[in-house]
Length: 578
Image (tube, rainbow, N blue to C red; front, side, top):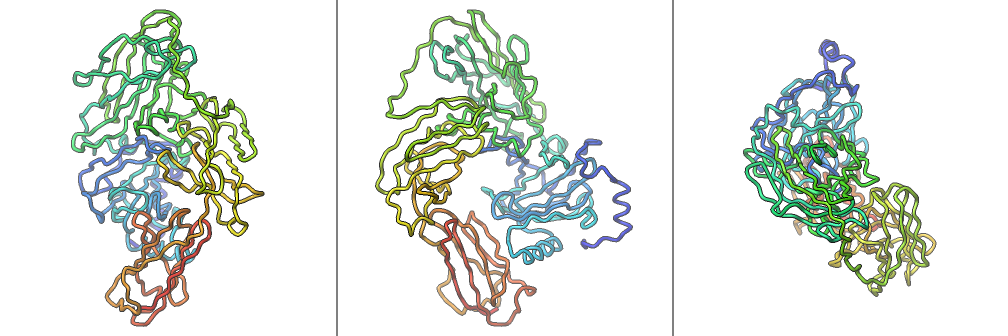
């Protein structure tokens, strides 16, 4: 299909759809057609709990391969094409009537006319990563038009198609299963795996202890109960649930659509994942028991809300979902868990109030300093060798901050224990650590390192200023100062030079960096910039030969320049025939 459209086609398109495109008001609910020419098998569902976000799309299997045809699900126009090495990889956005946008991501290659369109923009910007916004009269598509081949580009763990349906005005992703409900067959009930009960104040208790507890559950079909009940509790109590869903054909553990919590038949908490906002993604770290996730990689869904959690997926919540016990009465708890096809599982059990004082767990003895931090205020922790600024609303609740240090001669500062990794940050905090014995010549190469409990090192950015290395951090933990003076490595998997590439379609290199990571790369043939694709999963950059960029049947020179985040530069030079 040609990019240039005849005026009559454009006119007819706008007569049909008119002003509704992009206004964000859903005039009518569209049932979209399938984006693939094979049966739709789920590889991941909308709203699944992921690291630092909820999954904003619906993933479909592509038979474990790349190169399947991807089709438009409804008439509209291509409004955006984005290409990036990570994230969505190659992605196409189509605006439709009724205020919808569909997005198709992790593509291997776009339709030929779209591929040429993007390559022209890449050459113009001299960048592989481009984000192109198109006008409504540029590229019109009909329902069922071929637009790309499925792939494995961007931040993926295997070939699949990532599909999003968005509200055009806000760009909020919507649950695609609600718009493809005739395409997915699902009669399996959600599975409730674990129940947790939490004491939420200093005088609260679960089974006479001030500690969260996991209770075994048993089921008959889709009805669950607690083995030993009633559970004895005191004070303010919260409920946590680990649950997942499955479909009829695939055996993947996928996300839950909705959870309702009732106390004595009264709804006090409702969570529905039919729409999410990118701006709210990090609230997922308060949605879950973050400590349980970091320690054991278990995602326990809290059915109560921390004070600074403003996720819009919550509805009809009473007292933040917290259940209070001030006497010895018994309360019946009922939890309904649903998937997007209205398959429902129910967990029912009883909690009995108790007035016995809780058994306090002795705190871990540590040589540390402590300071209260208030989520509603800016928080500043200042010491001679460390400065920490935690801004207002960076925390989900008030807590007691802990700090300590220990020495390690391998680094250019002490190792600073900035609280612990089990308390999440919603916004970045500013951390400054004083350098020790750091030569002037290494100031520009200094950075903060985050060390986990196993001693693994993670680059955390940073720059030298007035004797300190300063960086914004997104997590508490152990930090120290290191340096990066090592340039990236560039490897061409053939030891020969002056190679004849006459019958080759592309030339590829492996690029790696030991610490701070690849910041940029540039490829030149005969002194002119050419587009190199970048696949970080394989540490691979490659150029696909194109007669529009180089002249064939000639000898050429190639130079590849790779720079890391601390501006260490590697260069590779070679000659070849093509």
